[in-house]
Length: 171
Image 1 (spheres, rainbow, N blue to C red):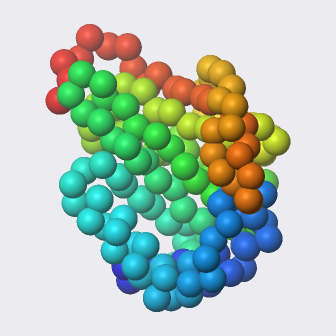
Image 2 (spheres, rainbow, N blue to C red):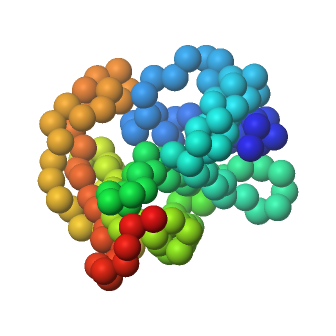
């Protein structure tokens, strides 16, 4: 995971303007290999505790073209996780996010018996909302002043997908 630091830094630099409407304002070191190494080491520590899982979009060329995460993974009686993702601007509209979201939801059910996956989008992020709709997510509400994005509090649309309703005992 921390081995992705240089490629992640390049990906974030390449997509800085593309992601700006949906991301918090990042400190300059976020866009460096050292900043990404620190961030990925923190993610890796959380991964070892079982609360997050992360995948990258790549083409086998050593570059990163986006990533997808399940975070806040809760087992027991809740069996829930939250989803986040982005795709490189040069690859948008090719179905990569749709395929990845579907695949991660399938993996979450198989790996952890996850019952419900949550996601949220900025109210103006129509592309991400389309991806979630294609993947079987339903809109469940609006959260006012939900996230501090691009220097201001922004509203988010909330979504969820129930992965199964089987009476399977929680793990």
